[in-house]
Length: 153
Ligand code: CA2
Image: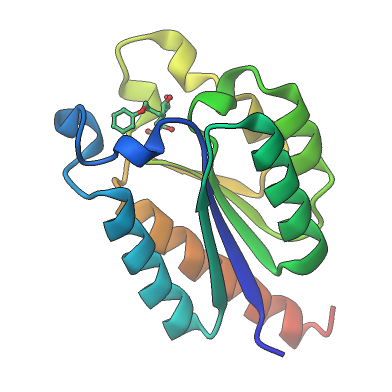
């Protein structure tokens, strides 16, 4: 069966490419989705790509990924800072979870942006590499799946 990768996007990311291009670049979310589909296909994954502004929808998607997926790439966006139910759901994941932020959280104008609470439960984080961070995250999940297959785990 083809392994499935989930790419989940949090609040306001539907505005990507239309607001603050100096921070988030000019790619739209549709561009990101296309790039993720290409990277997933190349790595032999089926892809589920979603964006939601609703915390309960994000929770449902994380549980879907955790129960039926092989890897999760998530840009929690504004959920990164205070959404403890999202943190709890990510903590339950046994699959690789890569947190992606388009901007470099540590170079932002306010200190709170660098304090994602998700960091403590994810496999790793990519921040500041623009929308290319999503593609790199997919490639890394594919790498982890190959390694765990080789180990027979
Ligand atoms: O850099 C990222 O990817 C962020 O996760 C984007 C979030 C922000 O709250 C994080 O601190 C960093 C969402 C930014 C607000 O929404 C926008 C979306 C597109 C364009 C402009 C703003």
